[in-house]
Length: 490
Image 1 (cartoon, rainbow, N blue to C red):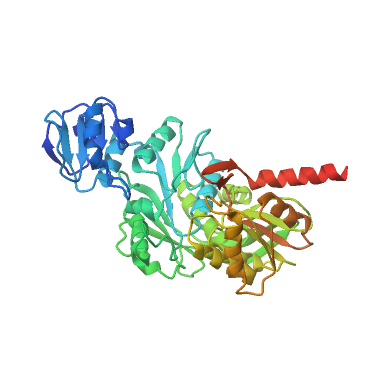
Image 2 (image 1 turned 180 degrees about the vertical axis):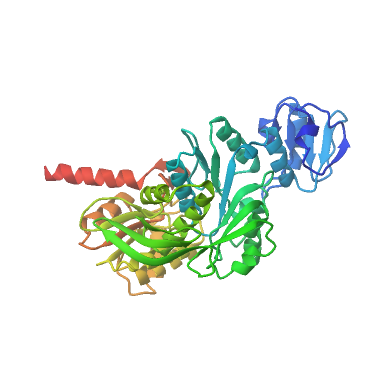
């Protein structure tokens, strides 16, 4: 492949060499460069790829894509662009043969609801006979291949590589989570989404190496509505007018608002032995009743978003109703049946905002007791521990403080910080450092009508201690506890 083919949709300056130069591979990691590679110099938060020019040239790179001036031998082609991250998205798309043009692409952004909505969409479309690829916080799914995720939205090169694999695997469409960082760093450039979804926005991801303030966070999220053909936006969000400012897509809305194109009406909480759910009626662009086995108002938003997307794929009402009933997301209000007497669930809520939202939702089901088990990660902001302790102390009837990912800190020191937050409330608590013992305590002390939530780990299947990840899946721990209980009873 020639350099000119890779640059066909980009503005650039050829500073030296020839755009007729042949390219063997495209790389942005200097360690992977081989003879005739094109190397893209990415400026990262920690490392600047321009510094590796001598190394990659020594390895045989014959083309450099740069945004700063560099010195290179005369037989090396140097292409200068305004932003190498932006350029990488288009170069990667061309390198993999523009695979997004052979897929229906769905991008979902927002502070909350991205992961759940992504899996709901996949469930509905697959139920209707589509073959769906997925890229998200938990994993990428390509046919039978499941790849654990490192970022919510991978680098643009990886996104395009996944798209290529999806096309080759016979996928019709792809649904992916789009983070504000992904948009800010141009990871979703190089193609236009067929559908861009904006679920909601709240202050989050603000700080060093993220967003300088809420306005910047919102501006980055809103970029999606200028990178899609059809934009689907939550009409109820208080920032709605700001979100849609400058959009270039055909706009549709959903929510409870009478102004929304697709509306939820007549919502009711439902529950049975060991499960919680919600029902409502879809009105507006569609008209039918829905019941889902995931609790809370935000579950209505998530499912309504999924319906708004799948409507464009001509999915029947019957298929939507059936698929929503069985849609599950690992670690997002994931109910695990342990008793007919009380409800136990696993959820990823790992900061105060998420925990408060979750406990508020569960309170609406008027449990006998609301029991919250959680810990906090080591080598992270201590404020999170105080805040989560205070939220759980205030909102739960019993808090079980345990260990999460202590990393290089002592678990007891983290627990003591959480207790400082709880001390601001009148909340009851017990502390059990070993997470399996803590879960066993929660199960063995469950009372009729209780809702017990194991918060913080969610989909994670490991515990990080002193630089090493040890296998630890709460589902496995629960199964072990139940098996051990059974053996004791025999």
